[in-house]
Picture 1: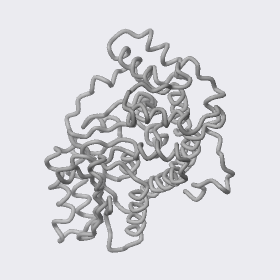
Picture 2: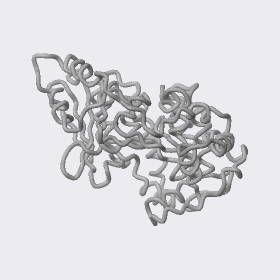
Picture 3: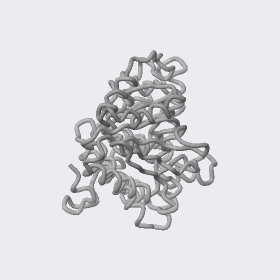
Picture 4: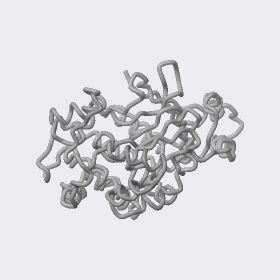
Length: 366
């Protein structure tokens, strides 16, 4: 049974992610099927606009996509299943396809949108959130890094918000995403079905005209109050050169925000905090295709960390997923255990390609 539904109605290609029992977490087959649909519609003149939404156990909307299937990552890494490498190659290729998509593309981001869900949505021309939207890139909590193009789209948020979001995994609720530049419109969740239908309702207009009407409607200014987490000191602290500089600055800063941020960072993988910071800093200077090639190198090293003699169950990522989603003891055995113990020799090899330029699995991205 397919985990995505697709149809063309009145010039609009409509996709529904249909794996509600897993919050639409992406399987390899879902990525393959999505790529086939987007590629077909890109080259199909009868499709003028594309829209995507999620589903939940009660129906459509309410959940977009909780990311990649991390239980699959865990089990495949232990079993040395080559499908793990295939997944990231396919997913990052899809991310690049969406960023360069030649037709208007709309993401209805109701409910949870994390990790791989952000990779599906951030390339959209119109990114719509609701008050129920819960958006985050929380990968450092599982010994991973904010991939799927996170080095590109997080690094282009205002100031040094990208570093903050990448390292802390801070959740953006509803209109928070607007102020971060990660959404274009905020609407009431109850209006999502009507907006979805409006794309195909008035056939006297072209699909492009209906898209433009929707964009005008949802992009009206909404009253967005600054959330408590958006402290004015984010820019100064997360602009500092190293993770340790940030830790030291937070330790010397009074107030709840600094204390909570410090406590949160101390829970995350020390190794991947450093790698993620370097990823965001490098990503600022890269195109999306270049960033995805870099991330493809990093994610290979996350599961095959040869320079530290770690792979499978001993890798940082498998351990992080074990603690969060498998054993659920929320007590990962990070290695090294302290932020202070990370050296540059541990970080740099993550950015070295394990492939020659001609053999890189994403060599054809542009």
